[in-house]
Image (cartoon, rainbow, N blue to C red; front, side, top):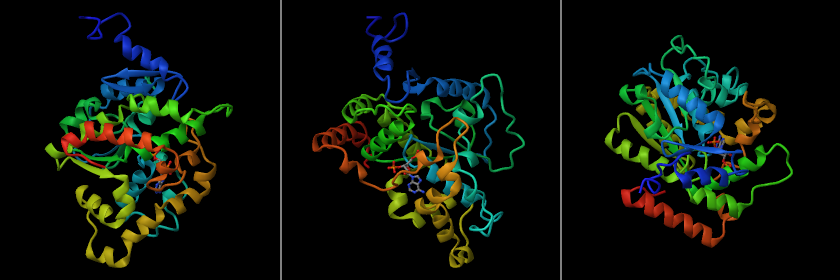
Length: 322
Ligand code: A3P
């Protein structure tokens, strides 16, 4: 009985196996923590930020995403939105023209708390502080849960998320000799083995909380950002407490932000074509195609059906549909 419950040396037998089964797909080895999967460096950051990020302010804004759901894009939107008065001439001297969005909006677990011996001093950052994370709701630092900070949660349909992740992991394979097979990676994704996966549990956690705490959590979808960008951006501005004035709307500020953050502009900037994150990933790996439905070009009808069934079973039951 204990063994079935996962109480055995080395942790739950099956999760231990899954960690090794992952080999090659996302990282050499994944670790499961509080029900979700992390690569080693990331897990160290998760533990460190859970321990040390104990001063979340009511004015903080936290961008939370499932990996490959449009994090880079939402970081750009939110940064441009909050700094629109500081940089009114958006196409002249805006930081987004020379810096990658991940540099401007750091990840808690990957950037700020990535060194277990060095705790960053975040007190000097002016309000509102803008951070990001891929952490599931159950693993957020306690001070984030306890404060009245705002959480922007972004997700994307699992088919496109999976295909985007599959391309991303193949691009990051440094030796360039082999690629992850689509079929193998697909099986793993469906089994929940992906960065910060299981994907569906990640979405479910925030979906439920967004219903319970609508003032704290705004749930966003990549597909909506693509379909109706100005509407979503206005919603976002209202949610974080800096709505656009009528004058701003008339002056075209919304259109300027959307244009500055568009795939075409961002992906063609020198910094995003050539630069690298401090962790080594090339900036250009974060800009592939930027469209909805590209997964139809890769997944078989059976794979699509399988993902749809899982999604309906795990999320549809709770009233969430992509
Ligand atoms: P695709 O691989 O489908 O093209 P993340 O930022 O969470 O890593 O997600 C990356 C995905 O967002 C990639 O999807 C990428 O092309 C897309 N993306 C990046 N910048 C974008 C932008 N400005 N507009 C739309 N999609 C963007």
